[in-house]
Image (cartoon, rainbow, N blue to C red; front, side):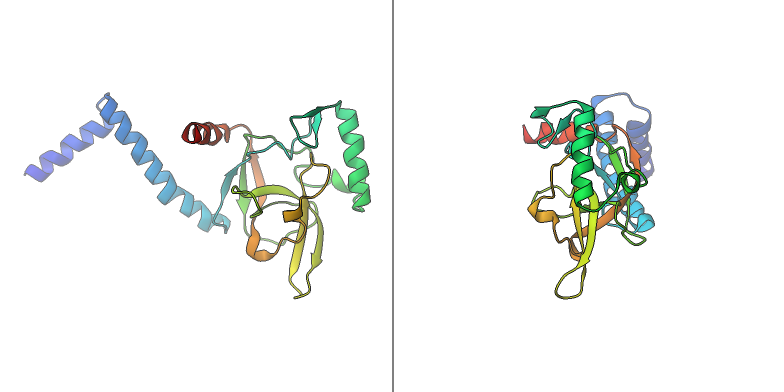
Amino acid sequence: MDLKKNIKKLWHLIWEENSVLSWTINIILAFIIVKFVIYPLLGIIFGTGFPVVAVVSCSMEHNEKIGQCDMQHIKFEKWYKTQKEIYNKLEITNEEFFSYRFANGFNKGDIMVLTGYGEVKEGDVIVFRGAAQEPIIHRVVKIGKNELGQETYQTKGDNNLWSRADEMDITEDRYIGKALLRIPYFGWVKLAFNGLVSF
């Protein structure tokens, strides 16, 4: 009988009461459900351990800033001309580039839904482990093979002047998934939370 009463009290506290304790418990429960139920379930559905990632840098933005993103301010036309020249050196034509998924880039603070299924093609946007702590999300600009016969990817941020050292020969063990869908701005929640935690 006591157990039944306690369960009713707990139910009332979680779902009906409007108190600081009730809100705190709800936040903790939401975190547990998302982290340990929804996220792993999405991982199974999409075939990757990282089914959803927040974009944490501006390296894929198509805006007035280039190279270091927040240091050089130039007009969009200059960005476009510079990137066109870079992609031409990679033997990627203007027409090819604009046939790629996410050809208009995406922004810091966006959420990207990933899949681990399907073959990776030139122009796909992939997420991989690099030198940075956070996974990196950049565009595949070249596919090759290493001396062991393994497929490798070279990527580049659309807003970067060239590929970084840690994205020249990405092997399957560093590959996390490819971008399937963009949800604008929802990643700012994670970025804001990370900022508070690291403050």
